Image 1: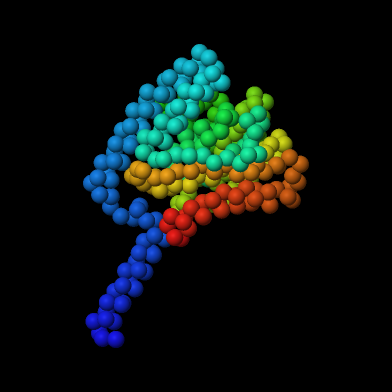
Image 2: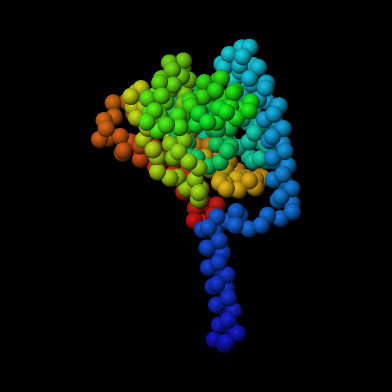
Length: 278
């Protein structure tokens, strides 16, 4: 091999190594978006803010005048519209064991600010989300979420479990399901992190089934610590087979929680392997 050929080979290997390293460290987030990409991202934000500003008062009015059940159509329209504002293609795939007339805890992987609207219209269930009480201080949005019965998580960790359990019990008694993010924080790398046990303790105590809900593609739309939105992604919501937590002992609880986490992680990992080769 000549010196020139050797240099070309070394350069190709270095480029391949850099490409692999680039993928492993976040892909598009690590490079400067083009002017066109910035323009599309800005358009997404303008569309999303405009849609939220228009729909939030309508949802609040519908709920106040007709109740949360009657306002469901408006709420689902809002959620679908918010995802559409990212120019993403959205679909949902649900396991046949999920019944419309049963209440569940929908456990979802936590990705970005679009998580709630990505999952909410995926089934016919009325769902109450779980979020920090401090979010209720946000203008308009906070008032609306609190008024519709969103489960508020206290800042004081010692008060969290009993208060959350009381609120979830009240929601379930009304025939409402729960939508929660057991990781407790948004993912840094797109993968599914460890789950906190509190919500699963409540599910066990109330004899609920937990639906592992995996969202793929949304990490490519927007990632933590970035406000750049990548349009035209394919987002899929996967509702896996419900896991029954009724009668689970304290000793069995960690394995049951891992069963839920693993079901979500398998979908997410398969997506990364197929789309990004990692």
